Image (cartoon, rainbow, N blue to C red; front, top):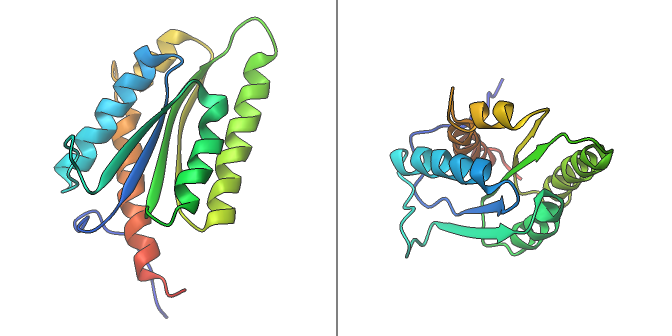
Length: 159
């Protein structure tokens, strides 16, 4: 029996793209900070002139799948991380956006064969989103770890 597992200790050579929604940037900025901190602490160069990391901003979470697809299909990246925050309001807009962004991100991963980390918070309140983006814990860190694990795992599984 062969067991395949990703590792967090060898990030050398991994190329990562991060797609971040500007809408709710109070939350997404904190997620990005946590994500970059994790990647940096695990050996990814996150500096301005990094050859390992590219960062792309989109207007909102709805636009994430389109750019994630472009990046994943480019052949330049081992993994794509998506960061967004959709907070429930008084209209059905929340349900539409959450449904489309989650289906879109999943489709990008399936169609491209590149892992796409779903880092889009879906919360009922701004307080819940802020708690997940740093007040209690920063899920951005977790999304960074997931990217490292999936990038490593995909390298270890034969095509």
